[in-house]
Amino acid sequence: MIGYLNLILRLTIWFLLTADLSLANIIIGVCVALLIPRGYTSPGALKDWLRTLGEVLVAVPQAYFEAVEIMLRPHRYEDVTRERVKPQRSPGLIFLDIFLITFTPKTIVLKYREEGWYDVHRILRRPRS
Image (cartoon, rainbow, N blue to C red; front, side, top):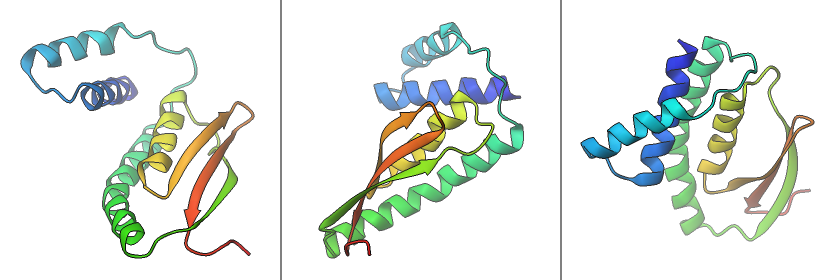
């Protein structure tokens, strides 16, 4: 099951990069997704994948809300924080975590640290106290 989720993740990234759902591009995308080397790390648990995919579904309306909020009430302050990576994350799940953080307009991951941290840049309405 994890192998299918990895394939779906790779195809999703391919389609986001190419923005083309033609038959030829789908065939090329499947070939690329199958040819990309797989890591030898332990796969993430299925429940972690499903939880993260649920978070992606929640992030879409949140991103729209934040975009409108930024337009209506400008955010003039910024902050860089360090967030811990959830334990026992596979590289695919770490990628999805970074995608989720960066997907919303108010945050972006500046750096992933191998020690298990993300450096996250945020814009804020008020300075942090």
